[in-house]
Image (cartoon, rainbow, N blue to C red; front, side):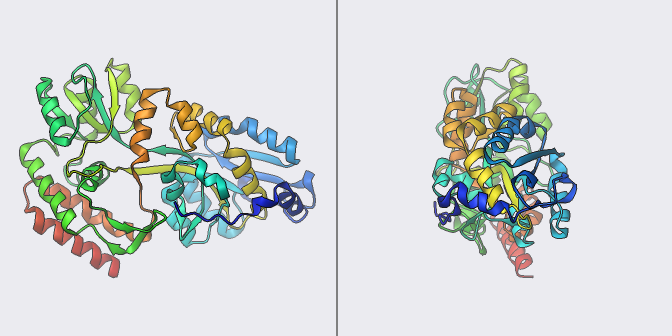
Amino acid sequence: MKVNRKTALGMGALVATAALALSGCAGGDGGGNESGGGESDTTLTVWVDANRATALKDVAAQFEEEKGIKVELVNKDFTKIQEQFAAQVPTGKGPDITVGAHDWLGGFVQNGLVAPIELGDKAADFQEVAVSAFTDDGKVYGLPYAIENIALMRNADLVPEAPTSFDDMIAKGAASGAEYPFVVGLDPANADPYHLYPFQTSFGNAVFAQNADGTYDGSQLTVGDEAGLAFASWLGAQGAAGTINLNLTQDLSKEAFNAGRAAFILTGPWNVADAEAKGINLAVDAIPSAGGQTARPFVGVQGFYVNAKSENTLVANEFLVNYIATEDVQTAIYEADKRTPALTASFEKASDDPIVAGFGAVGAEGVPMPTIPEMGSVWEFWGVSEAAIIKGEDPAATWSKMAADIQAKIGG
């Protein structure tokens, strides 16, 4: 992984301490002390949601005790943070640090809202895909804490062993006697490119080319290449065979699996608790390849951003890299919300749970959800085209037109 390894942390606490005389706080509705002037007057304001607030209480107190800097944890509705942060930062308000998702990165960087984080050698302590997700133009803009992705969930009472390929999965599912060998929740009009993407990547196709550091090159649309056409042909065949079924929505797919009427479901950890509550003997497997290569799902990563307009960027970096990026804190965050930890040591500890281990292993093979602006031109055509192919439209013609429409939208 190519990451920015220049770091101010090499000067240790001296750098952050020296900065205190000059630092105030970012202001805004975080309620921090705006007087500035010395250690006792400095407040680091951090926007968090309820689960993160609980997990960070102890480390906030530790930072205040050791650095003489108060950390104010402001509880926010996660679904509103992106909009509120984007609105307040340009006015000089908002927090010094906010929790957030990696797919906010493109807009945040484009609008100058977030500052790079100097991870230095700490980057190697995290799963590669987590750091890559928060990387833009060689700079890391987020301190990751959790990874989320889909994987194959199997009813181990119906099928005792993991499948070796997509065809093997369908065969095993059919042999189990289940009504549905395999289900994946789709939308009749727009399919679901997010859930179907692992099968697409197993043919060697990606939406955009990726740079050496894992970031996406918006100038190189690759979705329409030969590998993409091969996936489209396969998708049409699955639609005809009924193994990919547009009539099975997310709710219906979940209902079928949790009732024991489906042997396999492609879904995320958000459906684990309900399946276990229904008594399903659950196993989590790698997503079976349809095209011969590794099936790589999109990965979503959550982490912490630093406000680019904050007067406390050095202090914020110190708090994130030397206090949040530790095994104890990352494990506490995991225990508060049970999302796969981004820090390798915390993930290894959490992997005592085979469900966590299963999702984590699949996520490690995944690719970050693209955050580049060009991705906005993709969604408009992608799912509609997949649905049309599943319904019987010509795969090659439909897929090629989709790629051409996306390219025209990007160019326009």
